[in-house]
Image (cartoon, rainbow, N blue to C red):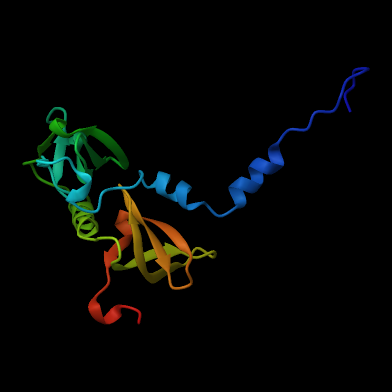
Length: 179
């Protein structure tokens, strides 16, 4: 109750918001966190589209400042998503140039992971890593349901769909596929 005469009690909607934070994320929320749906092939591009960069290329954006060197994660008709300094930035396709200087080992590994991700298509069996409730690393196999700009929606054998970032995904070898 309010201390003022005639005042009324106002409930804040905190419980509902807390429950939203505790609930599992929706497929739409996972897709959004991974940058949105990406075209898995050239079908998503305009006719005659020729990309200036490929997924996994090490590029620079803007001037030759090494801080602007990153790895291409997604290419579409008018934009390129570049992972640099721990962040993904979308830039115009004509705003990236190949990086010809030395590449740090960490950036080279990220480029390798991005190239592996770029080779995956919807319907592929993939291996991915995650942490369980206790914080221990777990490696699982699932089917890539939907490619996103910076990762994928993957369905486990128990039909649970997870959002997995590009760095945690790789193709499953033929003998490791579930039957």
